[in-house]
Length: 265
Image (cartoon, rainbow, N blue to C red; front, side, top):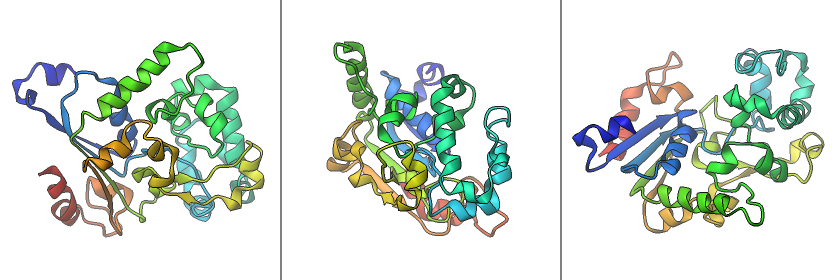
């Protein structure tokens, strides 16, 4: 706010660009900043609808993500290494949810708990302090006028955007599911226990079928209907390639020239 308020070059608006976890954080800024002048918002492989290791990504996670996940939270809080490969088929995910619910202060220390978008909506919408708020699906108790006011305010601030561009790639090896970058998520289960027992039944729900879009909770549908929502699904772009060349052969310059430059201009 200080940067944009103290420089005349931002008086007529500006473009806001974010990558990875910066996606939901930057969207939260847009929704909270009543005096923002963001004209065009660009999210590249943003974790817009949270993170959850589902059945389509479990084998990859077993093979590649054990050490990576262990760097996200300390073992004294949640010990990924204590789980066998078989446990990654739902048990680990269920235990992670239970830990998050039973240890709410963890969300104020490690962001991995904030972005956990587990597929049991009732507990997610009340126990996660971040994503439900900025997806505007947090529950307002009867008589809580401030909560209702804030929901309307956040939606109004999001709809100040003239354009919003959300970029994603099926080759993304970090965002799970990769469709989260374009507001997809896994299907729901009825109970926390079913995160484990019905794990293999989870499927992808695309943006248009989510509550956030169909009920227009924070403005996605309205922005879409007025022609300001742009969903970009691009093949063969790994997670880090949105910002630099990668050793896997993914090159940033063609990505920028073919896709990012047109969105910026």
